[in-house]
Length: 407
Image (tube, rainbow, N blue to C red; front, top):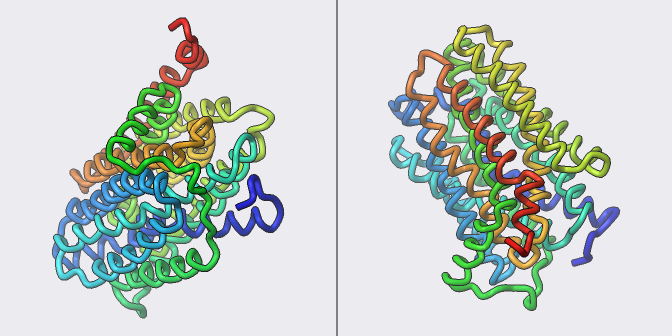
């Protein structure tokens, strides 16, 4: 494939990779408006329904750690097609789940197989682009990806409209979407990792590659920033279906609209990185975004403590999600620099930490269904941890020490 493609080739690649990358967000977000219906239909508590989100996030994390190194050894195209076919089957299993236990297990399989689209879309970007073009293209890809969180809850709410089928139809729709993406990938995606650039696909080789990444303090720092802040955002994903609909009485359709607006926030943040990174630098934008995220979630936490109105939750969450667009785009560009030979493994580590942390955070917000305070605590706490990591592991002084041969 052409290196640093431009024009129609660049746009076509962005749309194709966007289809792959949105599978994960759609898999997470599309069924959120159905949480109350699933709880009622399967006779399950809110925390048990949220467990289906947790297992999906664990699947996303495990799948990326497995698929990323495999793709470094065998190429991107083959593992991707196999994973997408299995995703279709996992989605059908979710739709046919007779009880909450089966749904929870099937959601793990769905996350496991959807992970390939996330990790391999990023690996392909690193295969094809470098330098400032890497940042600009990833910003473009993030803008496309942000349509998924915007559209998914709205689509899910439309499917749940009284004249349509129940929550099972959401998973049937995901199965159909997965089948379409398999067809497009098989017809349009070229292999981007030539044989001469592949690394041995042994367990030892994988462990060495991951170990080297974890010893790179700068890479680890940016990965942990994404892990804490983006992982913490799953408290919002898991909490708002009940907070908005049960505590504040909004309909599934209104919830879908409120949730979807935050997709526009991510688009704005990602666009800002692509527009201003050359002028201010990715790290400056990242620091500003993380500091602002801490401030916004601090306001949100206070609003939950004071049992504030819905608007007191919606506005700081919008600001927080705008920061998320900046954080995801700039952290990826900074972390992937110098990772040419192990882009799949680096992408896997970057992608795995967020759902792993999210899997821990998401069930906590369902421990007390009468208040939004657990959600506020989780969002503020994880944002604050992200800021601490950013300032300690990725500061210019730390990076200079790490590259000083005398040390």
